[in-house]
Image (cartoon, rainbow, N blue to C red; front, side, top):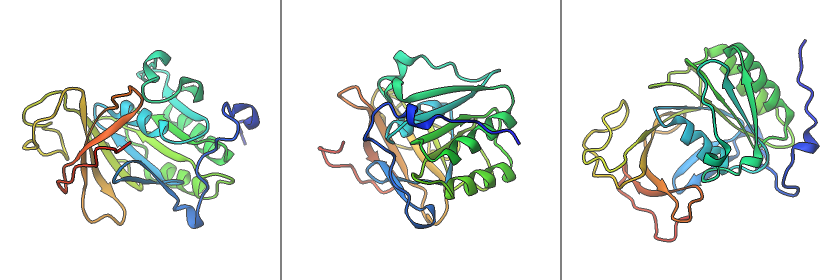
Length: 239
């Protein structure tokens, strides 16, 4: 059986900063923005035309090294200078996979390592149920820390068995919102350099919240502008 041999102690670029510890049954979670909560040690799907930005933003909110897997053919080529506004480039370990099967295998091995803050992989199409289930089981058994596990898929996504599915679309100054699947075209006018981030599916969540995000004024990360689903704006001091 093939295995990746990780020299994990050498990957901690910031000693003393580690991912959030895992709670019982892998249900620890983190909140990258007010109201946006994702369970750790579970697989989440990010789709939409701005899925790479969403993946970088979410991974940037974790602690510890981040493994980013892209496809050799058709994958996104990330420039480290462009990452700095969302995540410290020194935290990211880049891996290129020739096939989707290779990316899934690398994800599973990385998740099992127990020393990564996030594991993110881009796919040309949504993975099937069996590999998603394997990733869930690997993440739930991970010690000593629980990673954030993200799969990025094109268009509207559709991977079966994921814990949640989110869609990010640009809304740079559009007057009528973004007419994309899962996002209402009648949403209020968006300011320049902002994005809609919508929950299309989540286990145990009765509603489907939608958020409007923009770049942080400090140029590091993104901040919540509006909770569109419930009409609640965050306080002025929101991080």
